[in-house]
Length: 303
Length: 277
Image (cartoon, rainbow over all chains, first blue to last red; front, side, top):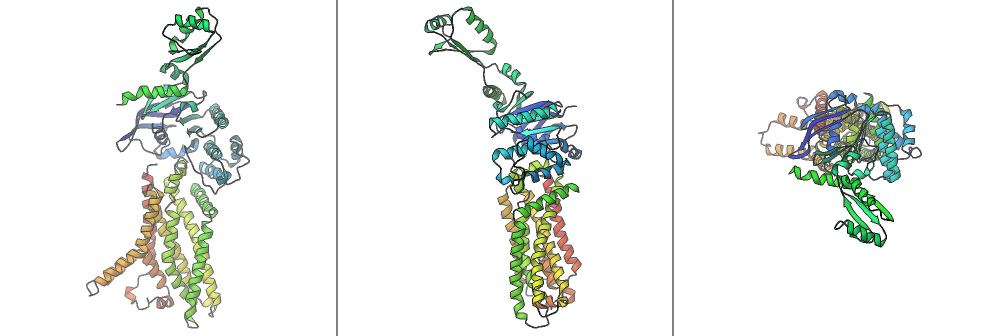
C-alpha cells in the first residue's frame, strides 16, 4: 500500500483550476519533492493530502484513508507537518508550545528535550517565542513536525529563508527520518533548494505534473546544452577555430555549447586533434536551468 | 475530552500571559467600585440594602461592558489564527473542529468569569462592609443572581463572537461586524422598540407582543432578570409597578439566554466545519 495515492485529483477555486487531474503515488519510505513556482498548486496539493480542503473531483488516499473522512483523525498523530509560514504564539515559550502540540498528539513529553537538541534550540527552549529569530522559529516549526516520530512527514518550503548550514541540517534531519522509514513529501519553489538525497522530484506547473523522476533523470530528459570552455595558447586556438569552423567564438577562451548527448563525442574529437590545451571546463545545466526549461517546454500545451 | 482540556489550558495561559485577564479584571473592579460607591451615597440610612443599589447599578454597567469584552475576546479567535497560520497547523493534529471551538469557548468563559467574579465581588464586599446594615442582612441572593447572569450574558456574546469569527475571511471585517452586533443588541434594538411603542401609543399596539419582542434580546432578558430579582431592586429600577401578569418567570429568562448561547455556538461549529482553509 502506498503512503499517498492521488488519482486524477482536481481542485477548482471558482473557475480557476488549481490542480488538474493529478496522478501521483508515494511509496512508504520514499522521499518526494514537489517543485513549482508560487501558484503552481503545491500548497493546494498538500492541503488535500492533509484533509484540510475537499477535492473538486478525483480521489486522495493517505495511509489507507480518505483524508476528509472521520477515521483519518486517528491517523493524524502519525503525520508531521511544517507549514510554509507559521507565527507561533509569541507569549509562550518554545517548550510550552511544543508541549501543547505533543499533548494533542498524545506523544511523550520526555522526547521533547531530544527534539530541541536536534534543531539546536535546547538552550533557547525556555525563552518566549517573541525573542526567537526567523531561523529559530523555522527550526521550532520543524521540531513541531517531528513530534512523535511521524510515519509521514510533510514539509512546506522547509529550507526557504535558511542559511546554507541550517539547510544542510534540515536535510540531515530529513535523511535520519528517511532511515527510520518515514515517507517524506517536501515542497519547494526552486530545484536549487533541493538536495541530491531526495529520491524523486515532481515538477508542478499550472496545476499539472510537468515532469516526474530523479534529479539525474530530469537532467537527461531536458537535454539542455552543456557549455564547454577551452583555454589554450594562441597558436593552438588558431588550429581549433579552423577545425571547428563556425562553432566557436574566441575571446581569450573558446566556448561551445554542446547538447548533452553529443558531449562525449565532442570531447573525443577534441582529444583526437592531439593539441596542447591549458585548461578545459565543462558546465552542465544547473537545476534552476532545468526547472526553467521544463516550465517553458510544458507551458504551450496548456493553451 | 483530554484534547479539549489541552486546548483550554493553552488558550487560558495565552489570555493570562498577554495580561488580558489582569487588564479586564482591573477595569471591571474600578468601574464597579466607582459605580457602586457613587450609587450608594444617596441611600443614606434608608431601609434599602446598599447591595441592592449596587446590583441595579452593576447590571446597567454589565449590559454595556460585558457584551463588549466578550466580543473582543471572541471576534479574532478563529480568523486571527487563520491569518497567522496556526489554525491550519492545529487542524492537521488529531483535533476536530468542534473541539477547537469548544476549547476556546470554555477557556474564554473561564477568563471572563474570573474578571466578573473578582471585579464585582470586590465591589460587592466593599459596599456590604461600608454599609450600616449587617453583613448577613444584605441582598446576597440578588448579588449571586447578578454574578450568574453576568456570566451567562458573557457566554451569549462569546458565542455570537465565534459565529462572526468563523464566517469572515479577515479579522478587520470581524472587528467591524462585532461592533455592529454590539450596537444592535445594546442600543439600536431597544431604540427600535421605543419607536414602536411611541408609534403605537394610541393603544393600537399589543403590550404582550412588545414585552416578548423585548425579551428576545438577551441583554433585555438579563436586565429583566436582575432588576426584578428582589422587591428592593424592583423598587429602585422602577420595575415595582409591573403587575404580576407582566412578570416573566426566571426560568423563561434563563432559557432565553441559554438559547442565545447554544444557537450561535452550534452555528459557529457548523460554519467552521465547512470553512475552506
